[in-house]
Image (cartoon, rainbow, N blue to C red):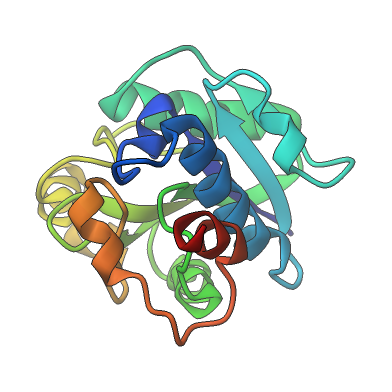
Amino acid sequence: MQRIAAVLVTPSTGQAAPPGVDPGAFLRAVAEDTYEIAAGLELVTPAVVSSVPGIEDITWPGTPVVSVPPLDGADLVRAAFEGIAKVAPEAGEAVLISADAPDLPSLLIGKLFRALGRAQVSVCPAHGGGAVALAARLPYPEWADRGMDAPDVVTALRAAAPERRAVATGPGWHRLRHPGDLSLLDPGLEGWENTRELLSG
């Protein structure tokens, strides 16, 4: 069974850029670092879902790039999963990863896929609300109508699910949504080289 790890890049991906750092450059740096996490997973096909023009430049040749309109919330998540299903019709499972998590440990993505053995949807919650990543069996369930920034996304999805166990949750992580969130980056973790270089410059 094919598995897809898709990085979701939107214009808001660059909103944590600190003073003096171009938001566009910051967006590309964090998105590329998050894409490298997805591309480094074993037995998983990386992809990018984006409403940002030219973002395919951060990917390796052959990577599926799904263009979506400038949506938000549940509409964006559904369009992303539907787009993934179109470019990868053989995929049975997919995870959608917010591009503003450049130091996300790949182990947490693996836990989301493993949880799909018993659940239809699995969530990596974000510190401060929302989700860092959403994984699902394909086709994406009709009842899973919550966005990546829904404040209490796990509770909301469980309330909408046909049964509570249809939604699994893994360990949480952080996203870079405001300049103050940059303090959450762990300098001891490997990876996030592009973001690290941009901030140190």
